[in-house]
Length: 447
Ligand code: GAP
Image (cartoon, rainbow, N blue to C red; front, top):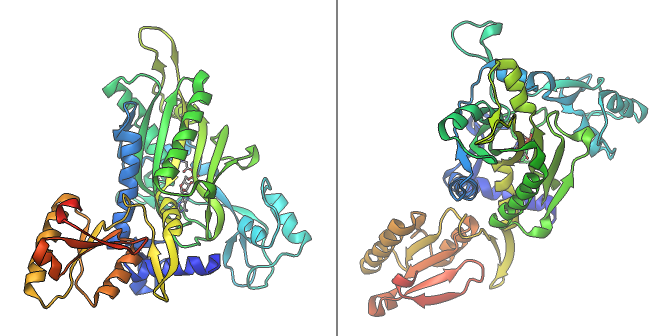
């Protein structure tokens, strides 16, 4: 199985088994949007809850927030997003379809790191690069990726707002509120999970590049003299996170982003890349945002964003370290690491080797035969008690036992419990391990 086949198999399994469906599918879809089905939403929440536990609940220096998605347009002017949150765009002169210039050039084999718009246009002209349809391309120009909308009944410039392209600004605008409510000592962080929206020119690669997606972001406020220490701390935390997701260490790579490729607010960025089946691509980012955002807010709002070191007159605007995680990319990395094919009794088997703490279903419970009331009754009792304890337990009595195992393998259920005639004699049940397919007899209390 090559990488392209693997990706196609994952997309097909995700749809077939109720993880991820194309958005608005029934009406022919809406490019760059995806809907999470019953198992997908559970897997996604398991990832998000793991993150919240690791980075918020288990720490003393972190505060959670949940800010409104719609924000005053001044937020996006001050943050620089109105002016600079752009991608390079080229247009097919015949079909008028638009493409990301850097993607087009990269796919054609040209290195694009650090190139500006004029460089990319020159590269296209010098090498006679054509659109995917074989037509002439326009000059490269910029395209702002924010979705513009209006808030309220009057449609004029003053009512313009944007769907947030990052959750970070909802954190920065609440920095002062939290400071005033909780008086935290520096360093401390604010964390937020939520939707972000980007009008990507060419959404692609399944959920990897979507127009609507979910972020989990931390803005960690530090004494400017200590930013390097904090950066290193979060770098180590990111590695712990990839480990907690069960991603093989050898598939995660750090990329020190050169200045020419860094976002407008960053003085240092490390992209954590992952070997997805689509290639080595960005999983998440770690940036040193300096006092760029709080400084802008202070200037534009006229409100003081300084922190006073307790018991002193030492005041400064804190600097910020920002680890920024994409939920869909984490989920895609988890799915691609988990997707496995092997052979059992001469037959091909597909299974998701998900870490148990992320698996959407922890146990499937079945009676060996569904037309034997005594087996069904005992299996129901075990199902109910496991469900009370773990929640994520599935009842499965459809088809023969082999088919049930295959179905549960495909959704990554680590344990299948079967009640058979021996259960009625000595109380024991069989538990089948997803990865080894080995079965053993245990008492239900041992599950
Ligand atoms: N606040 C900083 C920020 O938003 P970013 O590198 O633009 O930085 C952070 O985005 C993360 O959000 C990325 O590393 C990725 O995981 C995720 N992300 C960004 N754009 C995405 C898209 N179009 N689809 C899915 N995830 C995306």
